[in-house]
Amino acid sequence: MVLGKSLERWRREFPLLEELIATEEVFWLNPLYRRFNDAITEIPLSLKDVEDAEERLDKFAPYIAKVFPETKESKGIIESPIVSVSNLKKQMEDMLNQPLICKDLLLKCDSHLPISGSIKARGGIYEVLKHAEDLALKAGLLAGDEDYSIFAEDNFRDFFSGYSIAVGSTGNLGLSIGIMSAKLGFKVTVHMSADAKTWKKDLLRSKGVRVIEYPSDYSKAVEEGRKQAAKDPKGYFVDDENSVNLFLGYAVAALRLKDQLKDLNISVDENHPLFVYLPCGVGGGPGGVAFGLKLIFKDHVHCFFAEPTHSPCMLLGCMTGEHDQVCVQDFGIDNITEADGLAVGRASGFVGKMMANLLSGIYTVQDKTLFKMLKAMADTEGIFIEPSALAGVPGVYNLLSSKVGEQYLMAQGLRDQIQNSSHIIWATGGNMVPESEMKSYYQKAEYYQ
Ligand SMILES: *Cc1c(COP(=O)(O)O)cnc(C)c1O
Image 1 (cartoon, protein in one colour):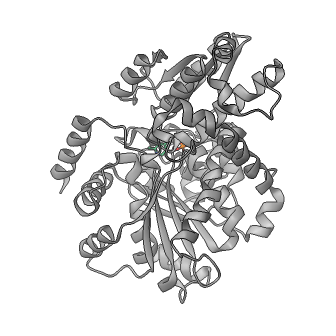
Image 2 (cartoon, rainbow, N blue to C red; image 1 turned 30 degrees about the horizontal axis):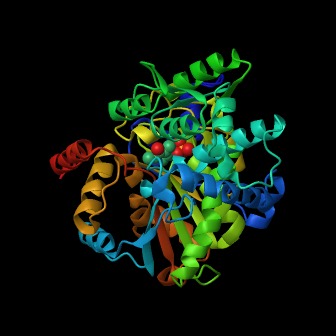
């Protein structure tokens, strides 16, 4: 029984559950997808909130440039390149033995974001900066109109050392929160799930971060972290499952992407649809980015999430409409995957509800496919990213060469425009993976060929 209903009844109500439970690759179209102007009326956040987050990041840029020299060139703006991956496209066409008809295939390299090498360098760092600003304003240490490089001064570090920050993570969020909090001077604790890689824990410890390990999955690490942080009156818990600030930090990506596409002369309009494929764990990263993109490109952008076949928590939550009231384990799915950034059994209810009418669909990917794509990306483009970060790749052929994809294009009236379409694979992490680790990923990929 799940939520008072037998498995039999769940399966009857949602026939796709059969394949989900069998951990087969599926492609689900969201029946609640609506026109942007209708959907947005029910959402409490707006473009103004995202612009406010962008302004705050701009204010902090002089500080970031000062304390993270790798961001000097970008003047303290934490942003990633977007590149064409036409060789990968060719390789996919060879694998499928059929053409993928579209105008551009692009890779958004959040895998190469400075400071923490993953998409978490957006939301995670933003949330810590926002919290630091709030504390400093409240204490009268800051008026708000200064050059924020003063955050690097000793009196700020001394002040923050009286406060603590905690987070639960499968790895990458811990890296972002840990590195940023430690740099500001906070006492910081990262609660890591069993999936978290040893090198991530070691790296954090080397920066003075307290790392607590749990033998169980992400949800448990978050729960424990939340419990312990609640006991500390000067403690702040970064709540990956419910945080609006985290979400807004991610959403800023869309404002920046708009300019990047303009620079590439890529239009997004009625005749030039944009498709974006985002790897999804708890949902904050892909949700925030997709939300920002919908605010900007409205009905001309189509966002799809990607999840491991063994961790389809967002699909389960959105399809049943039960969001965080169900988890994959309820349906006998084990949440065991090599895609550690996506190893989440219960999705964020906040994100699921925000995206309920804005998300076009969700598909699942086997670990084997992730490794195949890891090798294809490395061989054709020379880009090495972590397994989680490749979940976006199959979205392209799911949309352009499957029956379900065809069904989506027909329903949206996009058949004639597809030749003018652009597709963005969102690469979410990998730049900080040690070389030996990356080598073993690549070897695993060869084994799967
Ligand atoms: C965290 C993460 C994601 C997904 O982000 P969520 O906010 O958990 O949905 C995707 N890829 C990588 C590499 C990540 O670390």
